[in-house]
Amino acid sequence: MKGPSASSPPSETARQAVLTAVYGRHAEQLDRTFASFARVKNCSLHAFVVGDTLPRNQAPGIRYHLRPPDPRFLHPLRDVDFRRWLFVDEVEADFVLVVDGADVLCLRPLEPLSDLLKGGAVGAVVEHNGGRYLETGQYTSNFVNAGVTFWNVAASRELRQKIVARGRRHFRNLIDDQLALNELLHTEWFDRLTLLPCQYNYRGSLGPRPFGWPRVHSLDGVRIYHNKHWLNEARARAETPAHGRAVPLPTDAPPPGPWQQRWRRLKTRLSRKGLPPWWPRG
Image 1: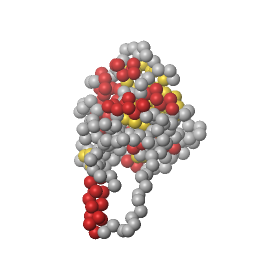
Image 2: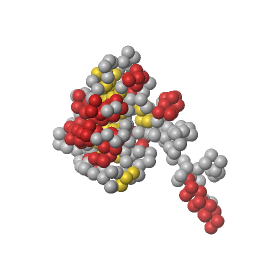
Image 3: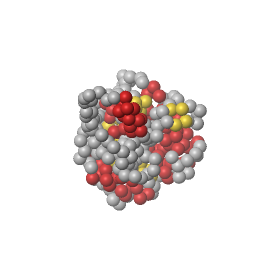
Image 4: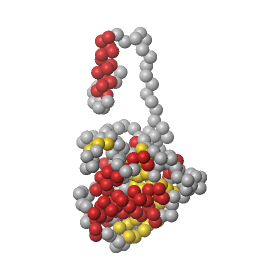
């Protein structure tokens, strides 16, 4: 990864913002989701509404901006998901965090965005299923989620423009933005990408749905939570510890014998996939 550019302002003087883009009924519900980013210190909050009118229910502390639809994206979801990365240039900030408007919560204050980027042009978190093949024929184990992205505004401008151009040029799906982002990140921009820990875009489910997602019982240490199925439950746990705690391991006394070693090896291997509730924990 390339180091910080000479023009990057230091974290103590940098201007930073949090941004979302929404349409339709989601614009009326930002008090349930996006307003939680008021926890981020020294950050302005900007909601770009793509449509004809601003919402009636406007949450305090959020600056609302109305923008007309762009018919070239063929669907309002593609419109907001691609264009939000161009709106970054409109908020007069040096560093911008862009988040989905409908299903992302901030549970704890964040470090300065410039510190999180660590000199990168863009920062993101690997998707919960991070191993993917790209249409370029390449494979990546770092396929990132597009719902929470961190941007050095000046250093990322070319990348953001290229992503949006791909969306205007060709329709593949309603979530093309994530495909286009990853295709460019893992080919032309991998040396300017900062991968952040999952605590900055936590996707785990607090219950049995949706199928195939990781199921968790704790949000300790989580800064940003992103799972539409469990927003109410996550909101109720907003006062979580700043860090998790590693479970202490008991001391082997006496050392385990051959059969006990085999049993522990089997249990450890299975635990990588997640132990079922009935599995002995000792």
